[in-house]
Image 1 (cartoon, rainbow, N blue to C red):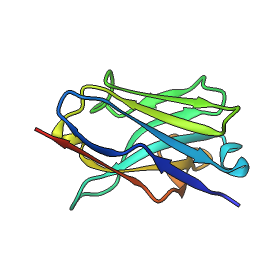
Image 2: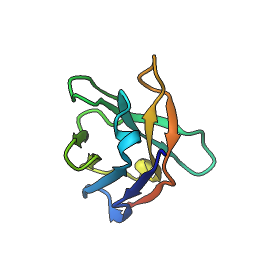
Image 3: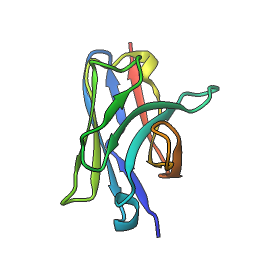
Length: 120
């Protein structure tokens, strides 16, 4: 079965950092790539970052490039999202997902999400 469990969200002030973690089941982590998405209140879910299983392919949304870093730990079946210089507009529920085959920015299986709130 595919299981994804996010953690690490919280309330921070603008300029601070958070690190999100996504613990994946063996089947989930064996997928070609995994990514992070987010959904702000009243908005559509959007792509944030993706990493291939090997780590050789990494892509970011323009809005987070240079501030967020995605990484994975194959030994722990875990994907991370290090978020620095957070802004109020980063406030959203963040979701971890396996990436649909043939794409780099479409999620397939999803976690339950973790809330990130950035105050100004």
